[in-house]
Length: 337
Image (tube, rainbow, N blue to C red; front, side, top):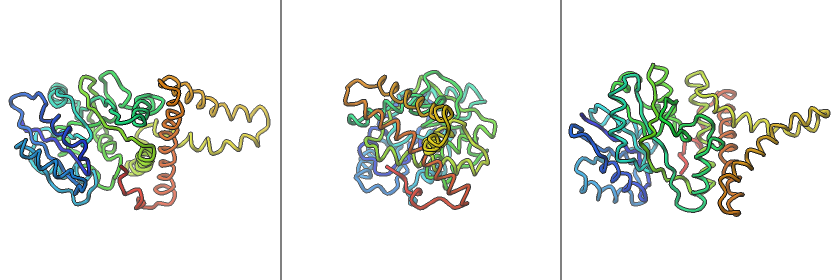
């Protein structure tokens, strides 16, 4: 049984060694022939030097170039590199558990309705700020109800991270959309479900994920998530999940708060109920996570960043793709780090 593990990578010298070591530390069935394919976007931070050392350590490790330096191209280059029976995608900052690959194979082999399997994200932080961001992203208030990042029990879901697919999935629905700088996995998994497959979240496998350690990077990341989500929606002519609408609707509501003061009482107070409800949830969620008094304001800032960045990005996408009928802006074509 041939298993390909595709690792898209660019400038990840601090994490790529841990990522590759974890893959090769997997406990695998004897009949598994494992190849790890790192698709590198011409890293210039020392990542290639690390990979050259790792190639001497692991004979089945392959490094190929991604001249486009963008994630969906990396996925497709890895998929097309060689024949496989199953393909696993692992981010360069993802450190998978030793049972990740084997358990994914078990699920796919035991249930033909399942076309994709992924596990739990365990956020890892490198400083106090990234710890705050990590904890906030692990809550339903931060990420939304039903988001796979907050699931604890194995179940069907709409998307997963570090997924495994059988080969027939690519034969049936094609490859990743190379127009999508963000949300290419959401788009692909939507196509999986649209074609009749199911996506399984497996709680007994997990990966450590090194989260962003600053608010600017977090803002850019979620702004792009919102922006590119609209591109996916216009592509499929549908809203792929209802929870994606909450942040943009909330941002529009907050921007219209001034209208409440033009309404007669008690309509103005009724209009403000949503803002008061959000403020209450914001304070409650932040207090619940706060261990040190000085962290309270950082949790407030993190939740606001998550919600407003995604919301504004989504509204930008609506303006760009739906109202003005434009192509993606060059600024949003650049992957944030």
